[in-house]
Image (spheres, helix red, strand yellow):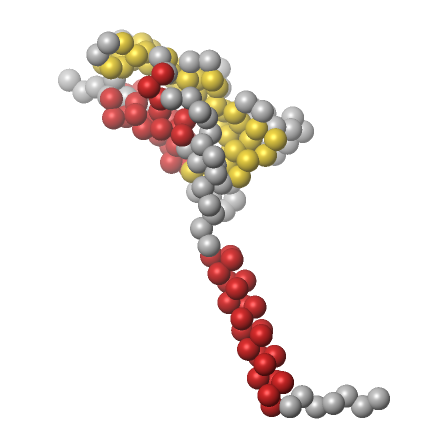
Amino acid sequence: TRMKQLSPMMLANLVLALLVISLLAFEQLTRPTPAGEPLTTQSPNAVQEIRVLRGDTLKFALLRDADGWMMTHPEVSRARTARVSHLLSLLGARSSLTLPLDNRKLADFGLLQPILEIQFDELTLRFGNESAPPGRRYLAIDDRISLIDEAYFRIAGLPAKHYRESD
């Protein structure tokens, strides 16, 4: 059989349909990822102790007292309230991806031997690898793996002296 030639009107409709599909696909790809649920329901105001570990080494520890926060390790001194507040904001961080914790996947995300751990009282957050493309970091919490903004990792990874109140 002989194929019919497209009329100019049919050709214009086809081009228009392809253009609409392309625009919809572009809009879908460039739309910001909606914020997920917060990592925890734990209130920052309820936290009494914070411990930051790199491997098995305690980098610094903070303890809430009547006047705010005290650094208790590696030295005893007052802690910067604003810097501790940034660290506590991790509790409410939004995840762009949440997966069930699967022990077979821990190594893939760098969570088998976490780079950094933060303990907020009894709650432990374990940081793994940076995502590809960069800008986000894998984190294990309870029974799930989340992907959060890299800024939280950078704040938590600051040396103890950055949390010490200056004289």
